[in-house]
Picture 1 (cartoon, helix red, strand yellow):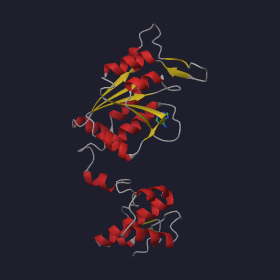
Picture 2 (picture 1 turned 90 degrees about the vertical axis):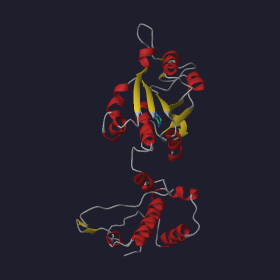
Picture 3 (picture 1 turned 90 degrees about the horizontal axis):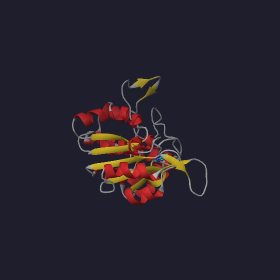
Picture 4 (picture 1 turned 30 degrees about the horizontal axis):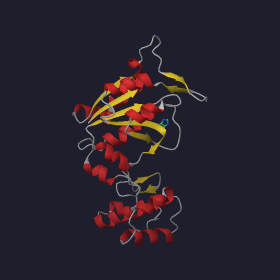
Length: 256
Ligand code: ADE
């Protein structure tokens, strides 16, 4: 996937593309990227990229001309062009999976109060918010969006890891433990060290339900709760499922 990011502060993104899993994905040729400074497309003496808002109001807006030229240079809107803004469609895993199928992605970062609407109308294909809160820069939102998407490209992360993550089943991921088996008097749930794979799978499913019910109960409305899952959910509720999940040493899942 080729990712082009348009920003007034491309240096914020450089470190992100040069480290860790992203660095490896770039080295393997799974991702290529280009960071484009919108200011390079502002041709006036002061390379001005912002101006006051028509109709009044606080703050400045990004001007259309530099944005238009910058987006034209990357082929937008002929390629999937995402503008990150708090006033967009809320990002979720399904949207990320959709974006991950693209060969090319353009991500536009806003600053100040946002950008001139005419640019959104003519050059942007997707208007995306990463959450119901306001960040001081679109660059942070762009990094979140890119991170959610690129790790779904085959070869970036192992398929097994992806399959086991939160949301892949519609539930939050179950709690996990590593050595030592006893830490600060807390024991790893016995079932996890017993080697009974069916019992471990059942424990994990139930622990996922406990966690989902406590932290994100609305997710349960989107999954099929007939059969084993529904039966386990009833068990969880009967055992006081709305409480904070604390599984270590607690026997909360009812399995030994
Ligand atoms: N820019 C500022 N806040 C944002 C948010 N929540 N999502 C996307 N872009 C943003």
